[in-house]
Image 1 (cartoon, rainbow, N blue to C red):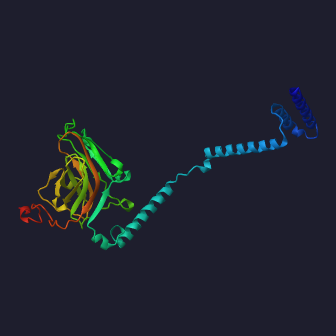
Image 2: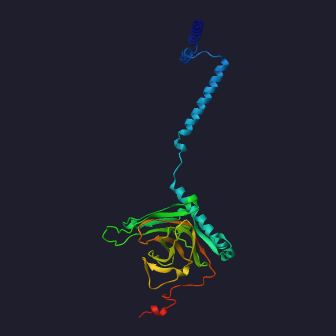
Length: 330
């Protein structure tokens, strides 16, 4: 009986709609017919509930439209790529860095008062406390000439050091030209200023290189390069030995700058020259002990130190300054 009663009510509502459609509003015929047909498919609800349901559906539909609008980016909202703007921003950044350099030069080195710099006994130049510190370094090996040595650089335990590791191989490349091989190196990048101008380190107030490292007992070569005003000769450098003990303990190494000897393409030159400490461009570490196998070197920091007990200016006699007779032109 309840079902029959519902059918009767729906039939009456359909008749009323048809009568309204025959009235003086012919343009509403289609809309009212659609409404009546839809009323046959949906249960009849009270006016209060109907309005609430419409508001809810409208709100949900509006939220859905907002989500779609967020997902679909219109052509007007796409970010514009402008090369002119990128160039202008780059120029502004370089001018800002140039301004900082000029202001720091007026105040003192690195923006500090001059008396603080003169009283400084030690200075940390490189330290490794995050992956961004590794960006100042690059690694290389004899793979560049066809060798088999491999070298890698990553952060050490707890991001408190840099770990240089790999495998050394003295097998010469089969190219018919190279007769020897077997080296791995870690080199600091040349510092750059505004407009990508090369800069240099000024260590003239210090006399000793100061490092805290932990190795596997292998000997390393510490290499320092100068940035002079003449044509840069990339194969010329100043070198000295660094001997690691091995084991789990850290060691602090101090190498006087007066001990560094002048070399060219790995060969010690007869005429030795003193290292210009106010024109340092980079420093590096090279392993080439001809012992094949794995290696590692962990570095905490690299700095400079002023040792008042060290008074030696230059350790080698075969210098044109110290022994001019040895280099007289005949």
